Length: 188
Image (cartoon, rainbow, N blue to C red; front, side, top):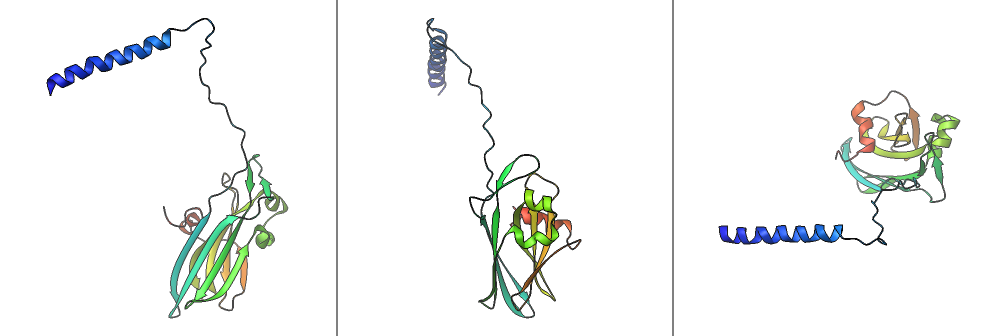
């Protein structure tokens, strides 16, 4: 074993030496340049698609919720305050009771317009939604509007009533864990 190591070591050193010598031997017409990483212009940002399903039991019945986030429309681009540009998202929420779908809606930022200022509507996207919990009023989903880079996100409670209607509200209705689940609904 020792003899093989001693034989391989000089060969490796010889190969390294040869490659260094080849790099040093250049002619006058050879241009040696250092590769410099150029900054690429910031393109339009697209959030990753998301497909999340959860189930819960409420009043003795099984409820299945599905939240799917994707590109709203490739022609809708939002420029936020810091100059970054984003494609807007749409989030489709589906709710089923005992296997029978009773709610389906494709949420877009306009669904939350009543809780946003004109500037927020112009410079924000729908970041995402996540199922939160059942309440006496129905199934509560948490939604966030803003930009990925901004700390100033507007959080909404979306209540889906048993009759299939919904309402969106802002306010202090969440704890920190509920808010963090919007960006990471699977807890990864």
